[in-house]
Amino acid sequence: MAERPLSPHITVYRWAYTMTLSILHRVTGVALAVSLLGLVLWLVSASLGADAYAAILPLLTCVPCKLLLALAVAALIYHLCNGLRHLAWDMGWGFERADARRSAALVVIATLIAAAVCCYFIFRLGAGAA
Amino acid sequence: MSLRTPLARALHHGTARDGVGHWLIQRVTAAALAPLAVWLLVALLSLPDAGYPSVVAWIGAGWNPVLLALTVLIGAWHAWLGVQVVIEDYVHGFLAKTIALLVSVLVHVLLAASGVYAVLRIALRNAG
Image (cartoon, rainbow over all chains, first blue to last red; front, side):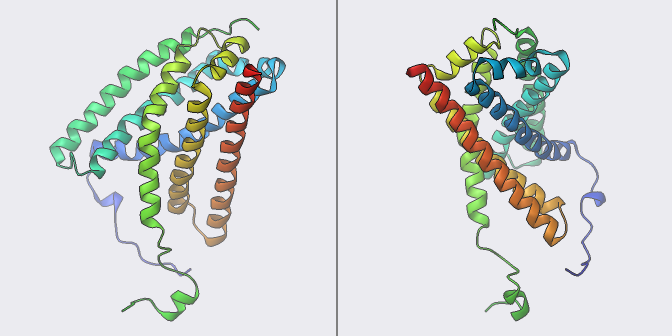
């Protein structure tokens, strides 16, 4: 296809923090698609029996893995909160600039609190009996 | 009156009349996933431990297999639609874009099918 001129877009606007939330929605969405792969691997290994599950269990309990798990959970919470914001917009609510900024701040605060609570539970999670 | 050139029509450029459906399904699956995601998070984080007996017992208990299968299925559907848009935006070139889109479909269908199968297998083994 021929190279076509593009009208200037992202780079010509002054950066507003609501734009960061917008791109984060996409980033966390892709991260969650990858996390879904992790969830399915977990389910499949559990369905294969105790030996197969024991083989992947270190992936849930080692500290770096728990960090990844915490990131995935944080991504889920963010995408959930910001997704609700998007659904509200789709129904025509909260489009005013002040409202959008307020809801953006709300999303960030809610994500931080919920993610912190979840991280506590993730790092408490033990391997349990084999 | 159509403003499209005959060449564009012959090359199948232009609207596929699919945009509104994509948009709507993305929203409907999002609305379905919101409560499912909260349920999954609360349920997973309140597991006593990540060991095999507790995990298998939880997957098979009560309505958990139904909700889990729905989460995987609708999650894969929603992820497929989202990843599709990301590929369309950032992968350039007809061939690369087409291959990426097809691989994405395959991966998401495979994820949905194997996730649902795994849940059913555990649930039916617990029941039987």
